Length: 150
Image (cartoon, rainbow, N blue to C red; front, side, top):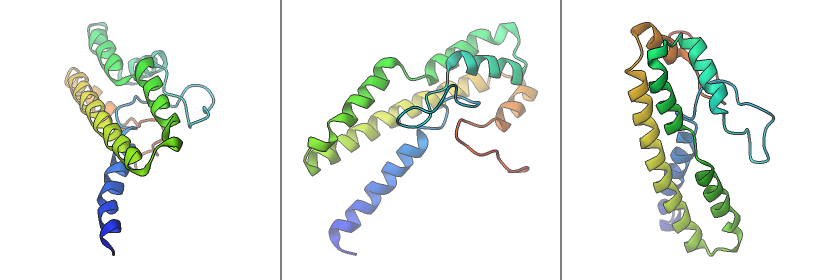
C-alpha cells in the first residue's frame, strides 16, 4: 500500500464511524412519513414521545425527563439546514477543502453524539429497572431487530 492510501484508510474508518454514529440515539421506532430525498426523514418527536410512553409505561412524574431527552436527541432545524448547506458546496471544493470540511463535520458529529449519549443516559437512569429492560430491547430507526440473547 502506498503512503497516500495508508493515510486515507484511517480517515475512511473515522468517516464510517461518524456516519454509523448518526443513527444512535436519534430516537426509537419507525420513521414517520415517506422517505425523503436523502433517505428516511428524521423521526417525529411527538411520535417518539408517544411510542416511548406506551412501550415503557412512563409515569407522569417521568414526563420532564422524557421531554428533556427528546429535546436533546432531536436535531434542530438550524442543524439540519447547516448540514444540507455544507453538503451543497462540496462539488466546487478542492480536495484539501473537502477533506477539511469532512474533519469539521466529523468534529461536529462527535460533539452532537456525545450530547445525545449523555441525554440518553440521563433519561435511562430515570427509568425503573423494568422500563430499562424494555428500553434496552427497543431499536433505533433503520436498525434491524436484535437477535434474542444479543
